Amino acid sequence: MSYSFTQHIDVALVVLNAFFLFFFGLILYLRREDRREGYPLENELTGALDPAGGPILTANRKTFHLPFGHGSVTVPSLEREPVQIAARRTDFGFGSPIEPTGNPLVDGVGPAAWANRAKRPDLDYEGHARIVPMSTVAEFSVAMQDADPRGFKVVAADGVVVGTVSELWIDKADRLIRYLQVSLQGEAPREVLAPMMMASVKRKTGTVTIDAIVSGQWAEAPAMPEGSAVITLYEEERVQAYFGGGYLYATPQRSEPLL
Image 1 (cartoon, rainbow, N blue to C red):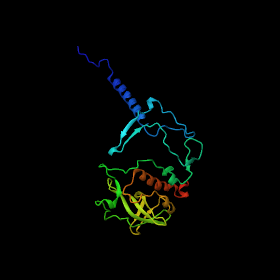
Image 2 (tube, rainbow, N blue to C red):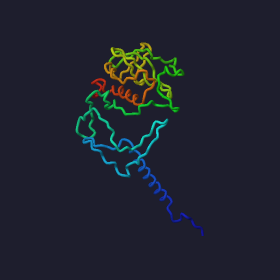
Image 3 (spheres, rainbow, N blue to C red):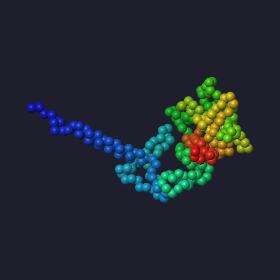
């Protein structure tokens, strides 16, 4: 008489229950892991901190070692970040929008907000600065088919010429131009970086139009330290935030409804 080990076992039911247990464990793991950053939560109206959520919904502290000897980061910290926002709520309800109380491009509100990233340059796989001026790397040049914007006039959103492109900052890893270094004209000349992705280069007229901000706002754009050949992650964040925020805050009309 033959005997099967699974004669009195419903294999399909066992597999189904095993899947349910695995799936439950996976959800629990993911819900713990996604609580490493951005916590603790706080009440929008009162600012009171919400409880951590208990052991089931709270991740254990874990230390991540950064590459190239740049220290380590331990998360979650379970502490509120010391951030003060120069804005006020337009209503008392949950989720109500906020409006800036100062200069939103500088104060970092809404689309002009930035993160306190590391004050060191972004690095390539070999540990070298990834974004550098083109003049410092002899193996890079502008393709003959493309216009070299160096020397072109920079035109703001209101049609005013604010300066001249003096240098190109390239991404050595992605092989493209990331920023235009602009020498601003006026009584207090200064060098600022503008995102290449927001620029429209016109070879026939020898101009570069950046419609993110108007001419009067270039004076407060983040400036590069004199003689610097690197840009830090923090400085990149400020540049992107300042110009990106201009598409909403540069003029009153941009902040108004479309219709």
